[in-house]
Length: 217
Ligand code: 5GP
Image (cartoon, rainbow, N blue to C red; front, side, top):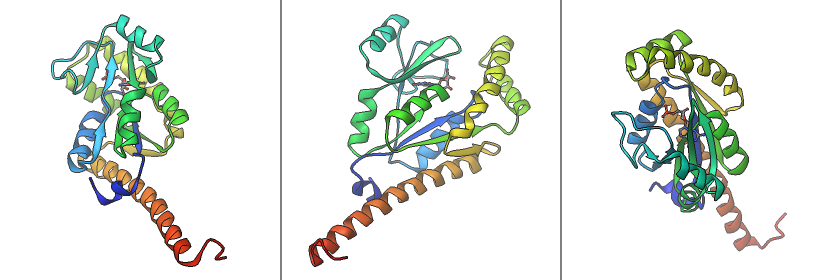
C-alpha cells in the first residue's frame, strides 16, 4: 500500500463505463497491473460466462432467481439490466474495501454509475469512448464473441450510451491502448494526490493548532 493510501481512511471509488467492445477490460487490466493498490470490484450477473471468463474473477455468475432474491434483500448498492441480463454490485463488497482505505474500480454501465455517484462519496466517473462507431463495429466483429444481430444491438446501445458521457468527470478515447492506459493511470494518481492534499492540509492544521492553540487567527 502506498504512502498516499495510508493517509486516507476511506478508499476512492473509480467507476468506469464504456460501450462494449471499447477495450475497457484490457484497459482496466493494463492500468491495474501497473497500479497494484487498485482493486477490481467483481459484479454479480445473470449472464452466462464467456469462454475466456472465470467465475469469481470476472464475475460471480448467478441464476436470475438468486439475483432477484438479492435485489429483494436490498443487497445491491446498484444493479441494472443490460441487453437482457442483470448485473449488480453489492453494498457489502464496496463498503468493506472502501472502509479499509482501498481504492476500487467498478466496471459498470451508465445506469449503475448514476446510482453509485448518488450513494457513494468520493466517486470518480470515467467514460471510455471508442475512436468512432465504425471502429467499434470493426472491434466487435474482430472479437468474434457475438452474432451479427447482437453486434447490431450493441452498436445501437453504444450510440445511446455515449449520450450519457457528458456527466462523467473524465473521458478517455481508446485509440491506442497504451496511451489509454497511461491516461487512466494518470487519472488515478491525480485523484489520489487530491485526497492526499486534503489530508496533508488536515495534518498541518492539527500540527498548527497543537503549537499555537485554536485561536491563532
Ligand atoms: P458484459 O456482458 O459485456 O461483460 O457487460 C455488459 C455491460 O454490463 C457493461 O457495460 C458492463 O460495464 C456492465 N456491468 C458489468 N457489471 C455491472 C454491474 O455490477 N452493474 C452495472 N450496472 N453494470 C455492470
